[in-house]
Length: 254
Ligand SMILES: C[S@@+](CC[C@H](N)C(=O)[O-])C[C@H]1O[C@@H](n2cnc3c(N)ncnc32)[C@H](O)[C@@H]1O
Image: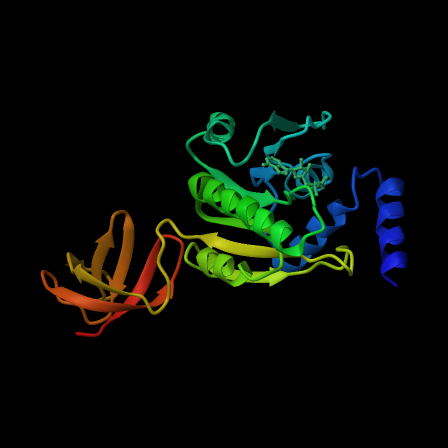
């Protein structure tokens, strides 16, 4: 079955003009998780030979930028950078193209050269995923989405937990186009949070004013926390109840 499945997506890509079978993985991820919408600006990390870039351009029609250690052959309407995603200079080059408004979506299908040692391959994959998450945190606009490939192993859960601190919604997913024998899994992060905050977290905050709906309003930098039954001028300890990209709801616990 794995063999048939491999042949199926391989030949499908050849027939339909995609550079790799991986194009269908991105399409399936998007059908399931709705990460890319028309007009989105997208940064693709580890993008060669360009199957995801072709699909990303097709799905969004917006600005698409691909980065890889390898040179990527030109694709209509897609900008490419030859660079290493673990280096700061690469981030600077992407920022020059994307500008201050930030990217709507960051996707990463980067993979290390496989050695056959499960632990080593897992460790290197996690390191690349960490680099991708770090780039996503710098590039995404609040509310933006993230997709990253990870090879499963001991450190997977810690990586997932880290992603959960930065997005309202985090899931893992294996598209049907992934080879059955592959250890790869994709982590999907939706609605990037402008600060690292999560449900259940506690903060001590000062209620600055009362909002139109009667909630107290406190701020962590530009992030607003609406505090139920808050009193203006009071310092309170709160527990976060519901998180959104630029604001959260909280209850007083003390
Ligand atoms: C599985 S391929 C990506 C396939 C691509 N999504 C597609 O659809 O054509 C993985 C890519 O990650 C790239 N890569 C690995 N480490 C990288 C790094 N540190 N910086 C940039 N690209 C990297 C590799 O050069 C390789 O082209």
